[in-house]
Length: 73
Image (tube, rainbow, N blue to C red; front, top):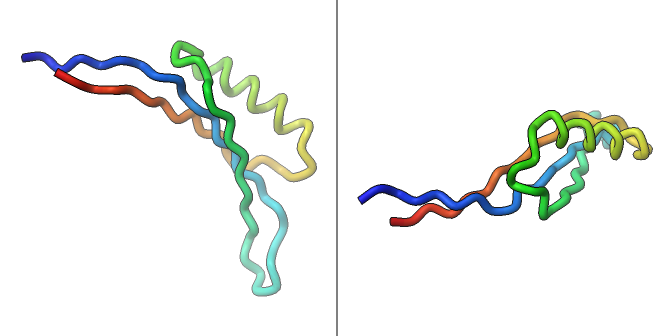
């Protein structure tokens, strides 16, 4: 029997450089946004991440689009 894959809403996670702590280690904070359309293209999600990053106080380190799906038989 074949495995059935159902796409679920994705999420966008953004990680920001928030300076350094007393030991010189970089402080990284993240923001997550849920319910990203599963059919949203990587280009469009990146475009939105860039817009959100431009509104933030801290510099963006990376953006992650986390896809989610259900697999069953």
